[in-house]
Image: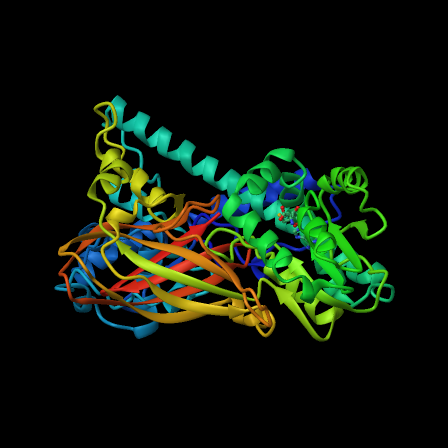
Length: 527
Ligand code: SAH
């Protein structure tokens, strides 16, 4: 869904105003405000006939009187959110259905469920720039022309709604300006550096990403995150055991540690017998790693390089082994595996290996009514106030929490196996059908996701660890996808579904996870 960001989003790049040189920003601002204000009075083509109406409210009125359908009633009846509303409009426009197709629809599935209907059918469709909530509340200045008889309360509400709209527009404008700034940098990079960059526009894009990555690397600059990782014994001891128990694999080898942090994995490798270890990290923690390596008299074996693996040049052409601890929540969050694959493809010698090499991502069904209430029903009554609208933002954000193994109500199932020695970048986005064998008759309140890690290839002493709910907890905990409406399940039945994992194009380090489960399409973000 993130590809389409209206009605309050920041729009696609190709809808953007032309690049400015930045000197006349104020003028641009004014123009954009005017442009936004004008939207309210744009002509609108009726959804069901060829009539062109003067505004959105006139169109709604026309639909009610001429086509006997109240869009507001349809929105209310099906509880449509922004995306549902957009999809409905595009569905009507693309299928050219008549008004009667909107009456007597089932609660689910709606005929516009497909994300294809997020794509606008009519360019700059004013109906798509209208907030369905405001339509329903009748608070939109456009749907509710001022009348002298309005009560003080109604006026105040209208003023608040207008303020809210202004705030959202301001935010949209800020995002658009930010995107413009980035586009400008991109254009400059392409023009100025086309010849000197390693790979033309890829280099320029990399430069843009630098901004975004700054926050990511600065989070790794602080000691606390490394303390947490080092204290995670399941994690750190697995790496240690893999290297110390397989010294024959490390003896006299050249090892690359992608994202060395404090240098712990490099030091394990050196102690395990590696001839040379090259340790790379872009974050400031590497300055500590330099001291740490010296304090342990390993400076002759370990060479530390500050920089992104994608940007630096290694002092050797090829390495025998790549080690890295790149795993994020739900395995792929952070997208650091991309960097390991980059290093693998560029530096790994023939016959070399990446460790850990195998990873499984698993799902299981959870029945935990108490947790569900704490997270969802909680918003129905907060100190006597109804905050139910918060559920709309709470549910789609996957939670990182420890799941009590007693609340599992299905056998786990592996939905994806990744072999780090073979996988390619495009395979890190995938869809997979799954089947959860239910073990308890109860309500399924969530799906839990986690991963297992294996040091396997060629090891005489294989090592693995799991981040699942049945074993010692790790700092990755588990990832929980809450179901707003629990699903009643019976022991012995198979809960079938499909999971799709893809990167958020606007922030490739974060993920979108979509479940198709019993006629429901549920999309979660992990950020
Ligand atoms: N290996 C350490 C730290 C793991 S955390 C340990 O096991 O304790 C991951 C580290 O990788 C962070 O310090 C982060 O700054 C670094 N990192 C992530 N992507 C990188 C990249 N593309 N180039 C260099 N370092 C990277």
